[in-house]
Image: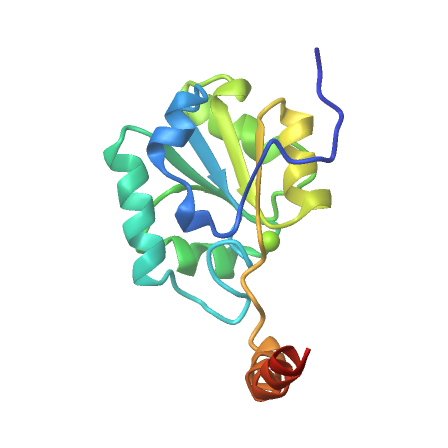
Length: 166
Ligand SMILES: [Mg+2]
């Protein structure tokens, strides 16, 4: 039966927490990865060491890795230089085009693919349209959120003091 739900199948805090074993145990053979706020934030042009290592781990376990971004070609091509994944730019998620292209490229079925991204109405919906597994991760905090992080740190002693008193 086709799944129409916007509720993700699986949720993780970070993409890098997803293990090959978890994917393989769900019958997954290929992943289609979002870039922005899933692997790195908008402002980061190239993959971090953590991204590269994680993708190597997936590939090492026999999983195929594709990138599908709604962002433009220059961003996607530069990001993909060190990864060399099958990539679709301006992929128009939530449409399933990028997943279908990855299926054809890798010779896998849609239900053997996990779409991994940070947005329900882009990535999860795309997985639904393709008939793939929808894995939602928390968006990597934007740099401007650093301000709030600092604020939290400054708030902490007062919160602790309140907790001690009550
Ligand atoms: Mg995203």
